[in-house]
Image 1 (cartoon, rainbow, N blue to C red):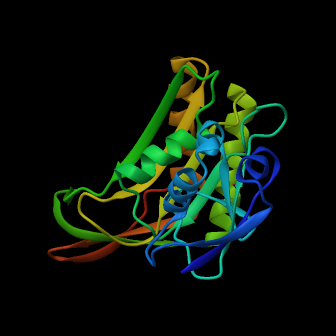
Image 2: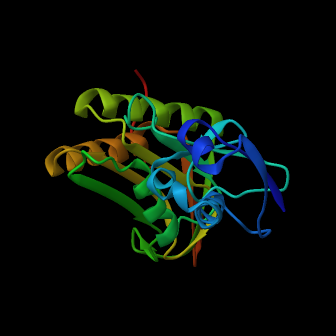
Length: 229
């Protein structure tokens, strides 16, 4: 497939052009495009790992899937090296080790002494039942809006915009990762507190529903707290 690349600021200078068509394998994601550019333009080594990804003019996680004809831009940090905007995303793509590591690299800043990441993993037992798999449903537009609110509150309380929250939907098998929350702060105490707040609030306010499919039937799990103001 071919993806239309657009280059800005330091990325444009290193590439020597404003954009181009990049040919990638059919199953490529954003991180694969990043790796292809680094191989093509070694001068990007100092900037590209710190860039946010904008797919079809919206920020996405490194594991976001690409499709033929997509427009992709890697956005350099703005404001003299200040961090990018927080990443919030609902996805059907796997959140494997490589995707999580790439997400952490995206939010890390040179002034951060602590990066804390929470990963929710599908377990094989729940409430005394043997679980076969999970299914997640979501109100996508509202979910990402609520996740953005959480990220804004993290930024306000802990003075950091190095925040990423990605939640999978659809069918998830045992052992797969359902949600990732990663926060980078100057000190570890802040990073732990901010990450704990983010995942706890996500669980209580974001409209995402989990169905447990067990050996003896299936059930939507009401694990969210009340969201009434």
